[in-house]
Length: 234
Image 1 (cartoon, helix red, strand yellow):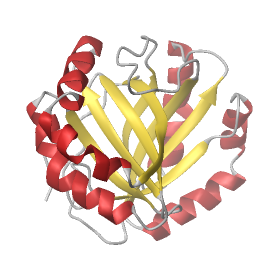
Image 2 (cartoon, rainbow, N blue to C red):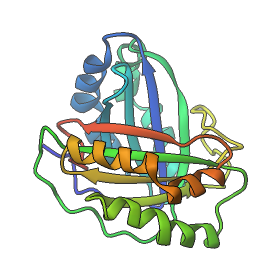
Image 3 (cartoon, one colour):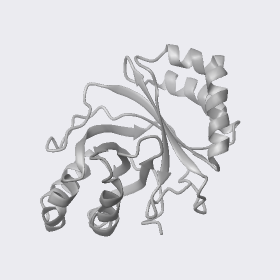
């Protein structure tokens, strides 16, 4: 069951947690039982909650805000509130590292992704591309005319194109990866087989190779399975 209708808020955290071996399901159970409704009640959005298909000890989730001031207010209220105080020890006991966080904003207007039936073979991918300088409109248009067709022509549903939010971290209690610039996008594939075929085609693509030459470091590709209560489903 989803927790709300998914969308892409103006400020988005992409959070990747490294967990102690074998503790991911325990964290997801706690997260979905205790942490979803209290965050929604404080005005936050949770567009996606995922298991990393290639790392059994990685938990990935998205948290969104109306703007940066709302982020500061909502996080202060949640992490200073009774729900986190009650359950933080149990949550933190599952984690090795929770500081791999990118602060992002949408670069293009996308419709909220349509609801999809839960398919055991479907998945979501996140592609994170490190940049040497902030993404400008010209780079966004290059993405629109080169990368977007590579995904959509291969049967993917493109869900978002995001770039680094340049505002300083206004809740320093929770670190983010400051001083980095990225472009990232999410896509939904109806089956793992379609995604594998697309990944193989990318490896042969001169268009993808040319894009990668622009990057400051190799792109990160996350293959993600939505949890039961993820708003975004595969």
